[in-house]
Length: 375
Image (tube, rainbow, N blue to C red; front, side, top):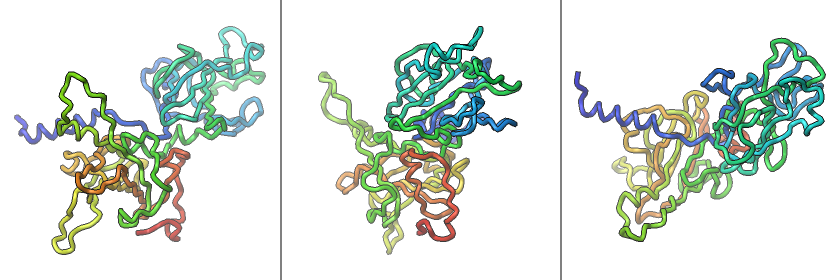
């Protein structure tokens, strides 16, 4: 049966939308370990569960050497592939301090191997230490998700025998400005938003976080910088005149901060007489959360959705390209977008998730008591 031209067009649009690359969620790390040494597939990060002797892989939990460690132990079979958790520069690291730590190591036991990754981009100011990892190379740049080595056993030379059935692991320590921090919610159940504007990789703000802005009817939220894309240097042999496509290409893309459904436009105001919505700058994008973002709504003001998203409710992934910042000639339109977030219909403050300072899911237990702002 032949498909109609309109249906063919819709199928093509959906296929392009699904296949488009996404930006990484701000503050959320890639999977560190593959499922097992023979697997070509990765699984989600999983921290070693507590054993019968109370030894756990959680941050600041008791380890088999009777110490409480400021690190997490991620399940990772020996010789399974290990991947970079974020973009950065790698360097070989000795987690046990050097040659003396090899005392007690026998045969194929080589625990004193690891890697330090100094973050760049959105991870600038952070560094991670992974051990025990046998590296493929000892320096250079890596991207999040790139294979950097294979897992080894950190405990093979330990003084206490490892109970039968205990899982092997890769230990991760995370530092922000050289201060040890808990990486748990950067690895697991990460509830940080994605990068929202193409030209603002770290969600930098204009003004204070969670501020009230009269331009957008006094709603509370975050005024994210979103400057024009900088044009490439013109070729001296080409015409210096800009085409319309060139001008449109300078308007930055907007990415969905959460997984959800684009359900349509949001407008700030309407004509009282005609109930019509007027003006280029009277435009925004409305996303209803799904999956782990269920019960959330995000409104992105000073932005317009991509044309084919107006065809009806469509599922989108976090980091998906969903629109553009507005560009309204002759109107006073700021080079920023304003983000409003609601949980169960109530405006809430998720500043840590916007900035990626803390990716743990907030418990909004005080909603019914009016602690947060209701509009």
